[in-house]
Length: 298
Image 1 (cartoon, rainbow, N blue to C red):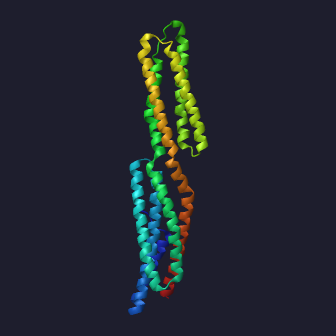
Image 2 (spheres, rainbow, N blue to C red; image 1 turned 180 degrees about the horizontal axis):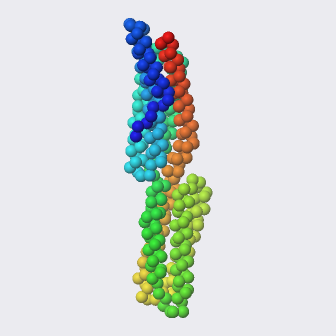
């Protein structure tokens, strides 16, 4: 994916060309030539600094939004590479600005470095959370193995036969209640995975525990009503229920870590504000250098 250069970078490119042309037209020599070259280099570095910061932020955001561990890790690696380029450009720009005695531009670079340090610390936390993908893993567990265990539980109960014909409808009612309890837990998994608040998650978990208790109670009653020939189906239903409950515990544990929800919330909130502050510093730095450039070409 090719990231377009920021608008400021395109303007700077034109200034660089103008500076080089001015230097050539004036047959610059010695100190004047060295000063113009430093200004050209500083202008180029400032443009690349802005570009690399944009690339780092874009890759970090894609890591947060990725739907697989592999792509999330790949985007996180891309963000780290762009971040290293930002730090390299900033480190190379500082001695140029010092040699040019551009105190205003040095102040602006100091401001960016300070804001970028805050941004980088938060971004590392965001990426660490993003690559864990616990909400995504919980979702896959819910829609995969947990659903299969719930379906197996229902199928086993559907195959039960009563010991007495008179208990047929009671057996069917108990089986339906047990199946409904398991389906309720299934339905509660998605809102739990998406929920950011601990109190709300605790409430959902309480409902899950109650529903699991209902399913177990129905199985105990069914054990006294099912025909001896249905003992195999009853044992299979019990095993499927315990597997489902165990999988649900895993879903809840992954959901509780909430890494995808937390990384997204940080990206859309605090990180976005820090990124905007960094952008403001970079634009101010490029604007200041562009004025120096126009002055040098007059």
